[in-house]
Image (tube, rainbow over all chains, first blue to last red; front, side, top):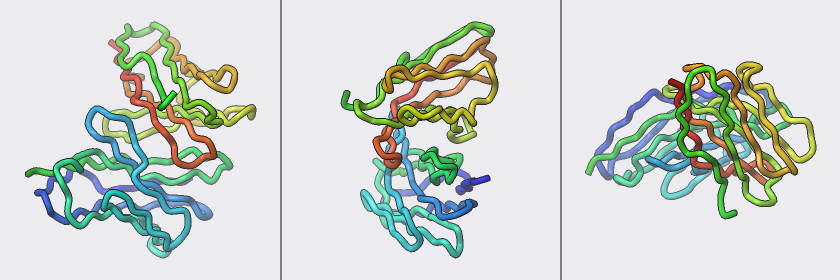
Amino acid sequence: GNSVTQMEGPVTLSEEAFLTINCTYTATGYPSLFWYVQYPGEGLQLLLKATKADDKGSNKGFEATYRKETTSFHLEKGSVQVSDSAVYFCALSDQGGSEKLVFGKGTKLTVNP
Amino acid sequence: GAGVSQSPSNKVTEKGKDVELRCDPISGHTALYWYRQSLGQGLEFLIYFQGNSAPDKSGLPSDRFSAERTGGSVSTLTIQRTQQEDSAVYLCASSLEGFGYTFGSGTRLTVV
Protein backbone atom coordinates (compact mmCIF):
# COMPACT_ATOMS: atom_id res chain seq x y z
CA GLY A 1 0.00 0.00 0.00
CA ASN A 2 0.89 3.65 -0.12
CA SER A 3 3.21 4.98 2.54
CA VAL A 4 5.16 8.07 3.52
CA THR A 5 8.45 8.12 5.38
CA GLN A 6 9.81 11.33 6.81
CA MET A 7 12.90 12.04 8.83
CA GLU A 8 12.75 11.39 12.52
CA GLY A 9 12.72 14.39 14.79
CA PRO A 10 13.02 16.39 16.72
CA VAL A 11 14.97 18.95 14.74
CA THR A 12 16.43 21.92 16.57
CA LEU A 13 17.87 24.88 14.68
CA SER A 14 18.98 28.41 15.37
CA GLU A 15 17.14 31.30 13.81
CA GLU A 16 18.18 31.98 10.18
CA ALA A 17 19.52 28.45 9.70
CA PHE A 18 18.71 26.39 6.60
CA LEU A 19 16.03 23.75 7.01
CA THR A 20 15.56 20.45 5.23
CA ILE A 21 13.03 17.84 6.28
CA ASN A 22 13.26 14.73 4.15
CA CYS A 23 10.20 12.92 2.87
CA THR A 24 10.03 9.88 0.62
CA TYR A 25 7.00 7.99 -0.51
CA THR A 26 5.81 4.70 -1.92
CA ALA A 27 2.76 4.79 -4.13
CA THR A 28 1.21 3.30 -7.20
CA GLY A 29 0.35 5.69 -9.95
CA TYR A 30 0.87 9.41 -9.60
CA PRO A 31 -0.16 10.71 -6.20
CA SER A 32 -0.38 14.32 -5.19
CA LEU A 33 2.00 15.32 -2.40
CA PHE A 34 1.47 17.67 0.50
CA TRP A 35 3.14 19.26 3.50
CA TYR A 36 0.95 20.10 6.46
CA VAL A 37 2.02 22.09 9.51
CA GLN A 38 0.67 21.95 13.06
CA TYR A 39 1.59 24.93 15.21
CA PRO A 40 1.46 24.46 19.00
CA GLY A 41 -2.12 24.27 20.19
CA GLU A 42 -3.57 24.55 16.70
CA GLY A 43 -5.02 22.25 14.06
CA LEU A 44 -3.24 21.06 10.94
CA GLN A 45 -2.91 23.54 8.11
CA LEU A 46 -1.97 22.90 4.51
CA LEU A 47 1.47 24.42 3.93
CA LEU A 48 2.05 23.53 0.29
CA LYS A 49 1.29 20.91 -2.31
CA ALA A 50 2.38 19.55 -5.69
CA THR A 51 0.18 17.52 -7.97
CA LYS A 52 2.57 16.20 -10.61
CA ALA A 53 6.22 15.37 -11.17
CA ASP A 54 8.66 18.32 -11.15
CA ASP A 55 6.05 20.66 -9.68
CA LYS A 56 7.35 22.90 -6.92
CA GLY A 57 5.02 23.86 -4.11
CA SER A 58 5.87 26.98 -2.13
CA ASN A 59 4.41 29.03 0.69
CA LYS A 60 5.72 31.26 3.52
CA GLY A 61 9.30 30.77 2.29
CA PHE A 62 9.01 26.98 2.33
CA GLU A 63 9.50 24.95 -0.85
CA ALA A 64 9.24 21.32 -1.89
CA THR A 65 9.73 19.75 -5.32
CA TYR A 66 7.94 16.61 -6.46
CA ARG A 67 10.75 14.26 -7.57
CA LYS A 68 9.33 11.18 -9.22
CA GLU A 69 12.72 9.66 -9.96
CA THR A 70 13.68 9.63 -6.29
CA THR A 71 10.10 9.41 -4.96
CA SER A 72 10.83 12.36 -2.72
CA PHE A 73 9.23 15.62 -1.62
CA HIS A 74 11.74 17.22 0.73
CA LEU A 75 10.73 20.40 2.56
CA GLU A 76 13.22 23.28 2.56
CA LYS A 77 13.47 26.80 3.88
CA GLY A 78 16.46 29.04 3.48
CA SER A 79 16.19 30.94 6.76
CA VAL A 80 13.95 29.70 9.55
CA GLN A 81 12.32 31.88 12.18
CA VAL A 82 11.24 31.14 15.74
CA SER A 83 7.64 31.29 14.50
CA ASP A 84 8.32 28.26 12.26
CA SER A 85 8.51 26.03 15.33
CA ALA A 86 5.84 23.40 14.72
CA VAL A 87 5.28 19.80 13.69
CA TYR A 88 5.50 19.17 9.95
CA PHE A 89 3.72 16.30 8.22
CA CYS A 90 4.36 14.99 4.73
CA ALA A 91 1.36 13.34 3.05
CA LEU A 92 0.19 11.87 -0.23
CA SER A 93 -3.21 11.42 -1.72
CA ASP A 94 -4.56 7.92 -1.82
CA GLN A 95 -5.16 6.39 -5.21
CA GLY A 96 -8.17 4.39 -4.14
CA GLY A 97 -10.67 6.75 -5.69
CA SER A 98 -11.12 8.89 -2.60
CA GLU A 99 -9.00 11.78 -1.53
CA LYS A 100 -7.96 10.36 1.79
CA LEU A 101 -4.42 11.21 2.72
CA VAL A 102 -1.61 8.99 3.93
CA PHE A 103 0.57 10.87 6.41
CA GLY A 104 4.09 10.50 7.63
CA LYS A 105 4.67 10.42 11.37
CA GLY A 106 5.56 14.08 11.60
CA THR A 107 8.78 15.96 12.36
CA LYS A 108 8.91 18.39 15.25
CA LEU A 109 10.93 21.52 14.51
CA THR A 110 12.13 23.87 17.22
CA VAL A 111 13.81 27.12 16.22
CA ASN A 112 15.76 28.92 18.93
CA PRO A 113 16.46 32.67 18.87
CA GLY B 1 -19.20 28.37 9.76
CA ALA B 2 -15.81 29.84 9.18
CA GLY B 3 -13.95 26.65 9.97
CA VAL B 4 -14.34 23.02 10.97
CA SER B 5 -15.68 22.83 14.50
CA GLN B 6 -15.17 19.83 16.75
CA SER B 7 -16.65 19.13 20.14
CA PRO B 8 -15.80 18.49 22.83
CA SER B 9 -12.24 19.75 22.69
CA ASN B 10 -11.28 17.43 25.53
CA LYS B 11 -12.96 14.29 26.80
CA VAL B 12 -11.94 12.08 29.69
CA THR B 13 -13.86 8.85 29.98
CA GLU B 14 -13.68 5.66 31.95
CA LYS B 15 -12.65 2.45 30.26
CA GLY B 16 -15.69 0.61 28.97
CA LYS B 17 -17.85 3.70 28.47
CA ASP B 18 -19.14 4.86 25.09
CA VAL B 19 -18.17 8.28 23.71
CA GLU B 20 -19.47 10.45 20.88
CA LEU B 21 -17.31 13.00 19.11
CA ARG B 22 -18.90 15.66 16.93
CA CYS B 23 -17.70 17.42 13.80
CA ASP B 24 -19.32 20.42 12.09
CA PRO B 25 -17.68 20.82 8.68
CA ILE B 26 -17.46 23.97 6.63
CA SER B 27 -20.82 24.70 5.06
CA GLY B 28 -21.00 23.35 1.51
CA HIS B 29 -18.03 21.02 1.85
CA THR B 30 -19.08 17.68 0.41
CA ALA B 31 -16.23 15.56 1.76
CA LEU B 32 -15.62 14.84 5.44
CA TYR B 33 -12.81 12.82 6.98
CA TRP B 34 -11.93 11.48 10.40
CA TYR B 35 -8.32 10.84 11.40
CA ARG B 36 -6.70 9.76 14.64
CA GLN B 37 -3.44 11.27 15.87
CA SER B 38 -1.64 9.14 18.40
CA LEU B 39 1.60 10.10 20.10
CA GLY B 40 4.48 9.09 17.87
CA GLN B 41 2.20 7.51 15.28
CA GLY B 42 1.33 10.35 12.97
CA LEU B 43 -2.16 10.57 11.55
CA GLU B 44 -4.19 7.46 10.92
CA PHE B 45 -7.14 7.56 8.49
CA LEU B 46 -10.40 6.32 9.98
CA ILE B 47 -13.34 7.06 7.69
CA TYR B 48 -14.32 9.23 4.72
CA PHE B 49 -17.71 10.57 3.61
CA GLN B 50 -18.28 12.01 0.12
CA GLY B 51 -21.70 13.37 -0.70
CA ASN B 52 -24.33 10.65 -0.83
CA SER B 53 -21.86 7.86 -1.60
CA ALA B 54 -21.29 4.98 0.79
CA PRO B 55 -18.57 5.97 3.27
CA ASP B 56 -15.08 4.53 3.05
CA LYS B 57 -14.74 2.80 6.42
CA SER B 58 -11.51 1.00 5.62
CA GLY B 59 -9.54 2.76 8.37
CA LEU B 60 -11.78 1.99 11.32
CA PRO B 61 -9.63 -0.09 13.71
CA SER B 62 -12.41 -2.27 15.13
CA ASP B 63 -16.16 -2.73 15.17
CA ARG B 64 -16.27 -0.60 18.31
CA PHE B 65 -15.81 2.40 16.05
CA SER B 66 -18.61 3.81 13.89
CA ALA B 67 -19.46 7.13 12.30
CA GLU B 68 -22.47 8.83 10.79
CA ARG B 69 -22.97 11.91 8.73
CA THR B 70 -26.47 13.28 8.89
CA GLY B 71 -27.92 15.40 6.10
CA GLY B 72 -24.55 15.63 4.42
CA SER B 73 -23.31 17.93 7.14
CA VAL B 74 -22.61 17.16 10.80
CA SER B 75 -20.77 13.95 11.59
CA THR B 76 -20.55 11.93 14.79
CA LEU B 77 -17.79 9.43 15.55
CA THR B 78 -18.84 6.89 18.18
CA ILE B 79 -16.48 4.68 20.11
CA GLN B 80 -18.14 1.93 22.12
CA ARG B 81 -16.64 0.24 25.16
CA THR B 82 -13.61 2.50 25.10
CA GLN B 83 -10.16 1.05 25.77
CA GLN B 84 -7.01 2.81 26.92
CA GLU B 85 -5.45 2.38 23.48
CA ASP B 86 -8.25 4.57 22.09
CA SER B 87 -6.66 7.57 23.81
CA ALA B 88 -5.62 9.97 21.05
CA VAL B 89 -6.55 13.20 19.34
CA TYR B 90 -9.39 12.66 16.89
CA LEU B 91 -9.27 15.07 13.97
CA CYS B 92 -12.01 15.92 11.52
CA ALA B 93 -11.44 17.60 8.17
CA SER B 94 -13.64 18.71 5.32
CA SER B 95 -13.05 19.68 1.71
CA LEU B 96 -15.05 20.80 -1.29
CA GLU B 97 -13.36 19.02 -4.15
CA GLY B 98 -11.03 16.62 -2.41
CA PHE B 99 -7.91 18.71 -2.15
CA GLY B 100 -6.93 21.28 0.41
CA TYR B 101 -8.45 19.88 3.55
CA THR B 102 -9.47 22.17 6.38
CA PHE B 103 -8.88 20.47 9.69
CA GLY B 104 -10.64 21.09 12.96
CA SER B 105 -8.67 21.54 16.17
CA GLY B 106 -9.50 18.02 17.26
CA THR B 107 -10.92 16.24 20.28
CA ARG B 108 -8.38 14.97 22.78
CA LEU B 109 -9.76 11.70 24.17
CA THR B 110 -8.29 10.23 27.32
CA VAL B 111 -9.50 6.84 28.52
CA VAL B 112 -8.70 6.16 32.17
